[in-house]
Image 1 (cartoon, rainbow, N blue to C red):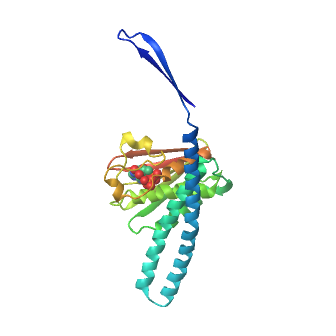
Image 2: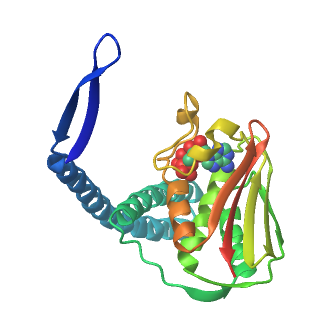
Image 3: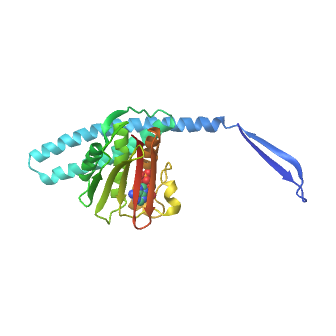
Length: 255
Ligand code: ADP
C-alpha cells in the first residue's frame, strides 16, 4: 500500500480535517515485475537468432572473399558490423534485466590493469578510421575485479567517445594509480555535456535530448550499466565535461 496524508484547511488556514488515502499498489508492482520478466525473455529470445545469423554472415564473407568478389564481401562485412550493433543492444537489455533482478554476477580475477586497457583500446581502434586513440598507461597495478565486466565499461567509454566526437580526430586514454586506487580516463574532443546535465548521464534511459537523438543512436543504457558495474566492484565513476569542448569519463577501482 502507498499511504498519503493531506490536511484540509479552512479560509483562516486552520486544519479541519485530514484526508487519508491508502492506494493498493499490488497490481502496479505485479505489472512492473511482468514487464521486467518479459524484457528478460524477449532479449534472450532475440539473442539466439542474431548469434546464428552472425555466424553465417562471417562464413559467407570468408567464402565470397576467397572467390575474389571484394564488393560483395564488403557488403556482407557491413551486415556483420550492424549485427554487432544489434548484439550490443540486446546485451544491454539483458544486462538491465539482470541488474533489476539483482542477478548480475561478478567473477573477480587478478590481472594487469594497463595491459588489459591496451587490449580494449586496440580492439576499439579497429572500429574507427577517423580517430586515433592515444594511450598513456601508467597505473602499473594489478586489480582484482571481473575482467570482462570492467572491459565492458572501457568499451562503453570508448564507443561513446567515438560516437559523440564525430568532428574530432583523437581520443586520449590514461591510467594512473593514486591513494590505493587505479584511475582510468577517456577524453574526447566532441560535443561535451552541459554542467546541468552531467549528473543525469549515468541514469537509466537518459539520452542526449532534442534533435540530436537522431544523430546519435542508442538506448541510453550503456553508462547506467557501467555505473552499476563499477559500483558493484566497489569503485567510483564520474564525468568532467564542457559543452562544445569535449568530455572526460573516469572510473576508479581499489587496488
Ligand atoms: P547512449 O549513448 O546509448 O545514449 P549512454 O548511457 O552510453 O547511452 O550515454 C547516455 C547519454 O550520455 C548519451 O545519450 C549522451 O547524452 C551522454 N554522453 C555519453 N557519453 C558522452 C560523450 N563522450 N560526450 C557527450 N555526451 C555523452
